[in-house]
Structure formats: C-alpha cells, structure tokens
Amino acid sequence: MSHAGKQVLTADFTGFKEEEMLVLMRELVDLLIENRSIARLLVIHKHNYLTPNYMKELRSYRKEERNYKVKTAMFGLNLAQKMILKGYNIFENRDVREFKTKEEAMQFLLSD
Image 1 (cartoon, one colour):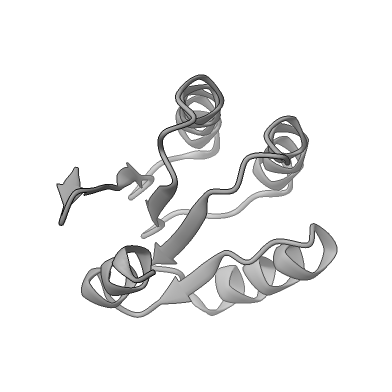
Image 2 (image 1 turned 90 degrees about the vertical axis):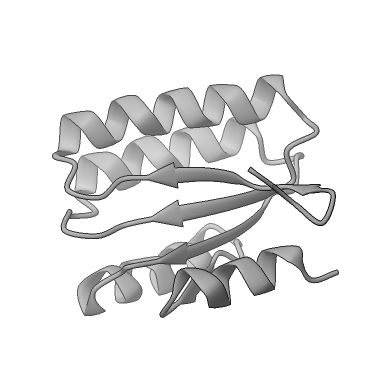
C-alpha cells in the first residue's frame, strides 16, 4: 500500500500455523531482496506463535538482506511474542518496533 508517496508492504500472519508462516516469510524476504525500493514493512502477528523453527528461518533470511535497511513495525503481538522480539532485536542487532495498534505502527513507518 502507499501512503503520502511512501510505499508500505504489509505482511499479515494472523491465525497462521508454523508452515504457513514459513511460506509467507520466505516469499516476503524474497520480495524484499528482489525489490530494493521497499523500505517500510508492516507485520501483523495475531493468534499465532513465533516458533523456534520460524525464528531460526527468519534469522537465516535476515542475514541475506543484512545490507538492506527495512524500517519494520509490528502489531498484534502477545506478551510472549514481545519478549521474543526484544531478544531478536538484541541478539540480531535489529530495531523492529512493536506497537499496540495499526495506526501507531503506520505513524512510525511514515515518519522520517
């Protein structure tokens, strides 16, 4: 989607099981690597789990696009997911932000 001339890619993992999440994540990362003009990503995680396999796969893909900076915001996370995200940011040297609402996440993504 595009807002104020800024392109925001949205990935909605709501209700996905692990295998569905892995498929969407692989497609998403491939799209980001192929299309370097995408600089903002909104990720929705509701009613799912950030499983060890998913996080392992995410870390391996993130290394492929490490030189490419994507401003990322998430919302819909439960408490456990927020803690996993905090650890991910620390250990992977990332700055993925978590928000309570889609509106707050979009405001962050569109700010420069």
